[in-house]
Image (cartoon, rainbow, N blue to C red):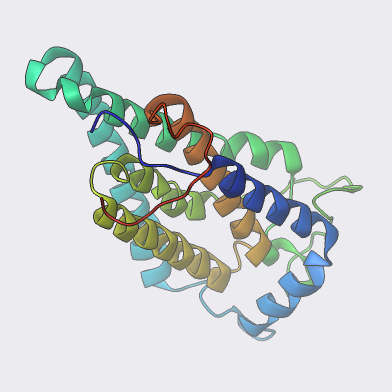
Length: 240
């Protein structure tokens, strides 16, 4: 396909930006704490804290699968530089490497910058650290938090890149990839919330960041508007 299907970039960037602003304005701690208390037992801690399935399978093994996908994308991109019959896939694979790489690479610097504590570290949930908001004063502690945004959620939500890779070639498959990435990111998020590793808002921020990164990379690398339709702002997800 020489041109991309129409996409309303203004709408699909404005919506997540508005959601970010909403998260900054509402009383996020009240919602986060109320939900976390559903998963917390004062006698035994978070209900999933010692779950072998959540830690070994849904956390470690699942993350390794996503890392493997990223490595395969890198290998495919390098192969597309050398193998002529793979040249048509050079740009999509390059996009996939870029979007997956940026989506996951921003997590560690943001964790260090924000120093937000995990739920399991807070006095409210049996820990020793005081709660500090995302934006506001953070009291000095021996071990600064490293829990915002959600790293494991990013492993799932970064696969939103598959939607953008496929939307111009295989629209129906792209919709499945979109649902799959949202479901996988949501599952990873829930698993870590059950363990006490993250609040809901941590994972929502991760979703919004990953969507914006995948969208921006798509606009820069893959999107090729039809000249007559450029600027119309039409959005279309159905198959052509």
